[in-house]
Length: 427
Ligand SMILES: [Zn+2]
Image 1 (cartoon, rainbow, N blue to C red):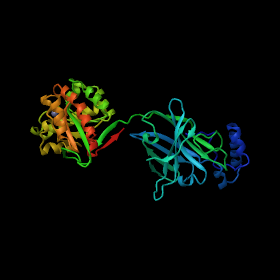
Image 2 (image 1 turned 90 degrees about the vertical axis):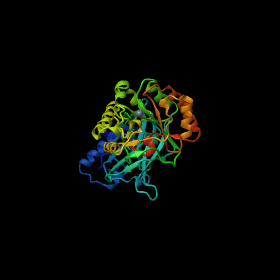
Image 3 (image 1 turned 60 degrees about the horizontal axis):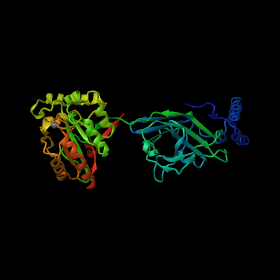
Image 4 (image 1 turned 180 degrees about the vertical axis):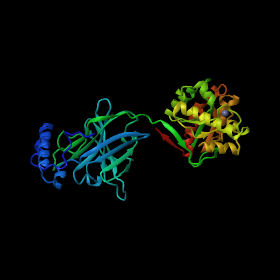
């Protein structure tokens, strides 16, 4: 909200001879001067355009919130304003970002006019270190304006050099010399040439975004991804399980910074991860979860209604455990018919097959699994392996060599949703 003490009255009479003194003496006098100005205004002094020019732009309301992966900065000013005119008028309108613990500023985001040939205003970010403001540069932000006095800018924390961690924020509106003598930086001295909204930096508990669902761009039957990018998707079926514990797979993949896709069997979730702890860990470090039916039955032999409940019950179990609604379905045994693909599609799923199958379930030995995978992978490959349904130590032990070799061959590891360009939604 607004700090009444620092908000200049809109119809204040200009007092150019007083302001420089005010700035050097401090806030007490500012308040006094503003009070005098307010009384003068209330007593019938006429509104003059010059009055607004001697004050920073007044913030009516400001907020910083998180929406999924984005931070959303919303500004409503007391009057229309043009980001493109700020610099010319010696004004700044910025969002100060500070550490949540010490309150030390880490940077500021300032509004500026559009780049040549563009319409949307720019957002410039400058780091602040030990009180010194660094060079500003434009960040990737989505800027929209509902009216001439509103502005909304959305950007990711990484665009301003921070991770998904709590931070403090405050909007600073300044007016620089000669109208005011306060410097137009992120840290001007207190005075009438700046307003801070809210009066004290506000804590925003930025948290790691949680995926809430995914949207297949195209539903149907897929056995490999685009071949024009050197990408590979590791997929694991039949878990969660206990030998080895699924968390061993999750941790090993995380150590290599490799995301994977886990196709889960509903009744295994009940047995091995009823609280969802392991599945939430998967999603938290970038893995994807898909639906592999409730009981691992051969769904092509079931009625459409049984197919539907096999998929829907597992999706519900995943959602209950994680809050995430999956959109990838893998048929047990790869056994499909058109009814099954249609049922999956009607429930919002794409049916995901594979193009590389090392038959790790038959326990051929770690070396055989490694060499079969390496022999099969090409750009766009979807690799089928298993993280449960039997002892899967061979599969786990095969992963380091598979990963290191494929990385050396220039492959990037992606989830199936990433490979197919499906969008994730976040909460
Ligand atoms: Zn399976």
